[in-house]
Image (cartoon, rainbow, N blue to C red):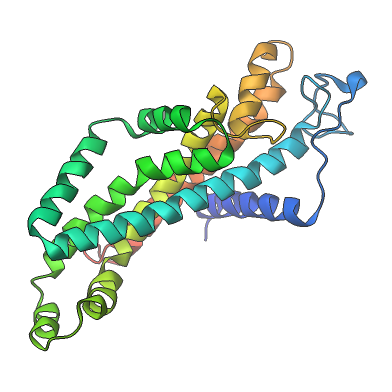
Length: 266
């Protein structure tokens, strides 16, 4: 594996390691040190200190855990909910399918991030509400994809044979439909991870996501914007973290999509 191909793997491994590290090792991100306010990177702190004299590196590590938790939770819930609704609508057809299509079209009429911001504003700030808001805006893509894949698979011989043999519907769906649509759903989930990282950071930047004293990459950028000219490291560190993580997820998503696409010659 070349260095270019290893790069996204190393970045995401570092993201995961940082998140796991804060679970087993206590990282103090709340201690205020007035002599260290806005000090730049140095031997005592590799990424410097923020406007309250707190370690930027420590807050970046805890922010990695929060970002990973939100991304995994939102994509997991969205995938399960969206897939279940898409498969059920396509299999049942009729009014169920028409209702699903109408609901999906309504959700798609709004930009996903703006919808999440509106929902988070209605629910109130907080980590749990941010997950709910992002899930409410994120299930639609999975539902549309699962519905399209299920409509195509309904006419396959093995599904028609199982139906003719009076195999219970839940067994048909779980054994003959869902396994065959997992590949595109996994690719969709991979790209959605990147979107959720950006969306969570945006909500926190706007003050309706993760709330203090919990650090978030988005809130770190917001707090450091006032000191951009005198202490750019306060903004550059979380900004670079978001950029590297999102870039790496998208690169791996492209690679995974090419690998799972059976039409591409290997």
